[in-house]
Length: 252
Image 1 (cartoon, one colour):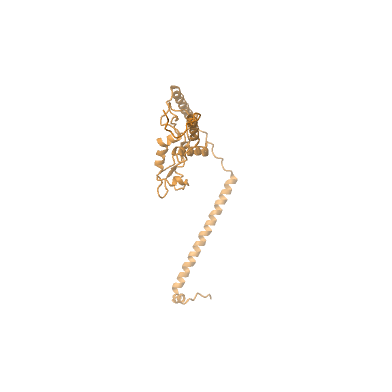
Image 2 (cartoon, one colour):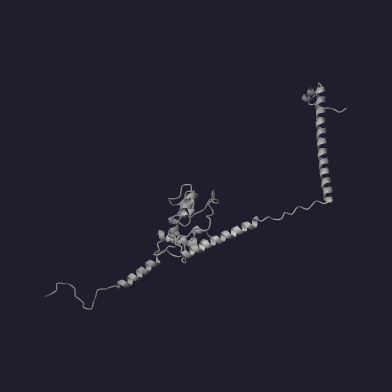
């Protein structure tokens, strides 16, 4: 049967093909190296990494990210929740102060118009007051961002026994310290003053009394002089007129 095609077929020409598995592997490798800077997960990872580098071992405990060595919860990548061993500092000292934050944080909808609030560097959020701030750093969101679970590791019987023994030893030590402090101590009387010191002390007191007596006599003398002057002016009928005209007293 004759063909109706207008072109000539070539037997040695084949359709071009591609190795799909090879290019899929290359695409996957490229996607693994590329990161989306606008991705919230990537932004959170970089923020926690920077916070960990800045603080090191000297930062507050409630801002420390869970380390790789900490025991993980079964079936989870998060560590067991730990009790805080240090006091939360900076609550009272930060009242009335100003903290500079990055522009993306200050431009978020969670910030009030006047910028007042407590800023959490881990969660990158603002809290309205110190009580809300304390609730936040103890809450689930903050602990999850640090890499902790809300589950607490169960202690074994040996750990409980060791803890009780340490408390008993501490109590005995404090009781012994109290007994030592309550023991009566020997009271040493002060040394008796020597005759020379008595004479010096009496001479000092006598000199002080004479000085006070002279001051009192001088004060009484000035008071009497002022009274005598007032009586003299009252006896002179022209005294008031002299004062009004600006004349002073003339000596004889």
